[in-house]
Every structure is written in structure tokens, then in C-alpha cells.
Length: 269
Image (cartoon, rainbow, N blue to C red):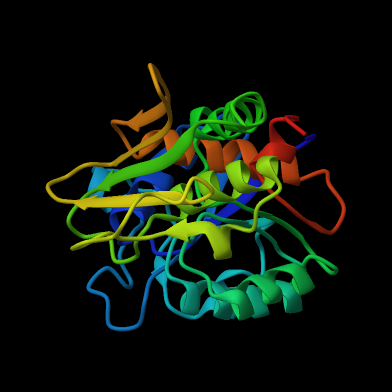
């Protein structure tokens, strides 16, 4: 990358948005060029650096098209409906996109895939480098432990998270199911209550915990008679997601149009 990457942040007044702004301001190869806020937000019209006691000269705006006219990449960790609206404008303006938003339905995933034919997009349910390394470890573990092991995925997040299971937990399930030649939609169990009968050995179970300020904990358990293998990742700060997102943005700067994920960014394929 030959010049400072002009970065825009969506959802600048949210918890993750503020972490992303702070990360961009501290990054040697990125400059903060725009910050988006939702209509009606108290932060609109304010300097994006105000929460940190800084003057950046970048004002939080709700006019997405105007805000994105002079940026290289938008980093978006908002909600599916907002991200898809931003996606349409990014396509129109030729702005690249890093998506950390989770909870997309099949239509939303299809829209991202279609847009990848025109602009560069990195989309991942978790931008943490450690989590994405865990995906690779899970692929290896699933292939080695393919027979005789029951698989359960447990995840915990803060009380404000609105989707469950988390996008990261679902992606972990997809990685394991793909490695085993299974269809996650057919073998996933998302809750158990009452008399459930014996466990189906081909199933992949999910358990969800919500409470407090947990940033994100994920554990995949491979359980057999006499032993248990666990692969876990615990995030203690949202900064890890921001650093991964900026790593993805810098990587994307020199890439052609396409839909990529963090496995591509980290050369783990």
C-alpha cells in the first residue's frame, strides 16, 4: 500500500464504532476520512474524536453517500439492514468494504456475494486474528476426530448482543460440519429441554450464554469416552476485532473485486 488508506467507520457512536475510530487514529497506514452515525443520534455533527478528547476534523454524519465520496474503504460493524444499505452505496461509488456485521439472512449473504463481483469486500463473522486461526485448528481437529467424538459449541457474550448463536459460533459449526462432510442446517441442535432422548452422534450442539460485559468467549468440545479436546478463544477487548478489521482493510486495498474473508487475509486457505 503506497499511501495512507482513507477509512470510513459506520456506526461511529456505538461501542464497536468508537473502538474502530480509536484504532484508525492510532494506525500508521490509515487515516480517518468519514464517520457514519444513524439519523437522530446525539453524536451527529460532533467531531469523531470528541469521546477521546481529540480534534480530528471529521464530523459524524448521517448522509452516507456524501460521507463516502472521498474514502477508500468502509469498515462496518453495525446491523444487517444498515450494512446492506451501506453496501448499495459502496457499489455505486466503488468503495471497498470490510464487514464485521453478523446476523445476515440468506438474502443478505447473497447480496454480499453479488456485490463482490463489483467491489472488494472482506466479510467475516469475527475479525479477530486468533479466532480465525481457531477456525483453521477446528478444521484440522474435526478431520482427525471424525469418528467417535461428540461435538458441542458453547459461546458467551454481553447482555446487549441481539443475535444467537453468535456469528462466530455458527461459523465454527460450519467449519466443523464442512470438514466432516455434513450439512450444518441438518445436524445443528440449538437448544435442549425436557426429555430429548439419547444424543444423535452426527449432531453438532450449540449452547448460548448472555450476560454482563463478556466481549466474546467460544469453545468447541470434541468429546469421546475417556477424553475431551477443547479449542477455545476468549476475547477480553473489542480492540482485537478492530485491529483485525484494519488488517483486512489494508490487505483489501490492493486486491481486485471479490468477496473474501479473514482466512484469505491471513493466508490460511
